Image (cartoon, rainbow, N blue to C red):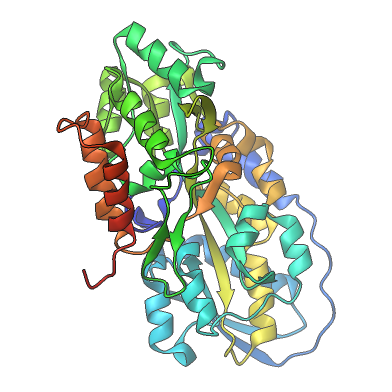
Length: 423
């Protein structure tokens, strides 16, 4: 995963009901059994609403819209039209012509700031209820200055640790040192795509060093080269060097990671939910998944961090039927329909109860991504971040062959990340 949170086609989780050990019919029945309060009585004429969403979701969304119409039957006549719009380009299309955009639209959280700043997003009118129903991190992703502007509905974009239980105990996978030691002894490898800034961030996010995007939304601030504090930039650089020097460490992109899992050479790796099915097929009942481990840095154990990502539904502030658009967005993202999304599309819910369902609890990858979210941060990144991270990581993986002073390496990394876009 590089450069944009939803580059993997919305990152629908590659797990199926078969992995849960229970039938999809049983889970559907569970979803349908969720009790919903009766609607307040309001009177409306014909209500026309347009929903922008991924075309692959239309069959599922049509079912949700049907139940919405049934639920509010007698209060209005509804004409709800689905318009295909890839989530990856939602903000570009919406900001191109706000007044022609959907009344309700789906988008990933890395587009939230643009949409909110443009005044497109109508504040959620019952924010306390929505906030209480969803994981706190997803609410933070949909909020600005403590005002909720969208309805979260997935929490599945991030990364964690997969491991083969044939080799590792639950204690082994709590520390990166322990994982490397087991892999070295077994003559096997662990995998992490360190050359991607998306994964490199894991070594910095919980150190107290700071990084993020400036208010212009284009350039970055970064003090990863800091010479002060309990953890300094060179401490992290040395920790990364120590990891990459292990014969058990292997840097692999997604395809190579899965190929090495399948041939048995990789027995643990950092990746996301989209690989769950293939890993389950390779390791069977020995497939395990947990939050990322700690790593040794500056004489202490530091929890590895991650970028996190969520998808949400927004309501167009310029909608002619804003009240009903708000009700529809709420409906499409409620507990019942997040559960149906999990069953039908394998998308990890942001709703607390849906995520804690028996079906979700039986899939290690689902629980791992939720556990890791407590140690993750939203991806808010300017363009200069990515290439700078790749250049730095390549030096680390090679073992710093030119013996460049670590402070110089960190200064160069920070300078590259914070460079003007004109450079």
